[in-house]
Length: 73
Image 1: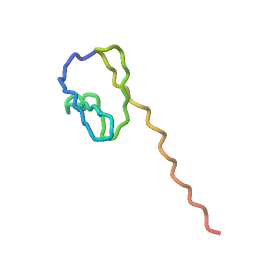
Image 2: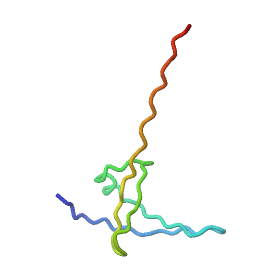
Image 3: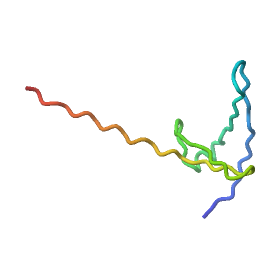
Image 4: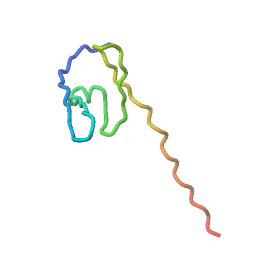
């Protein structure tokens, strides 16, 4: 079932000298919890229309395999 809860947010901008402005959107904790987001998780935005964005999870790279120990000779 699709939830229709709404979480108002404000877009913030950081302006630094010699850099282009950067825009930030903070995700409210209840929304992050509902999405089961984790700190450091990679996501990307998909532009649906000028009024709608979709947040997509970026597939995580495969976990590294543990190194095998070589037998002593």
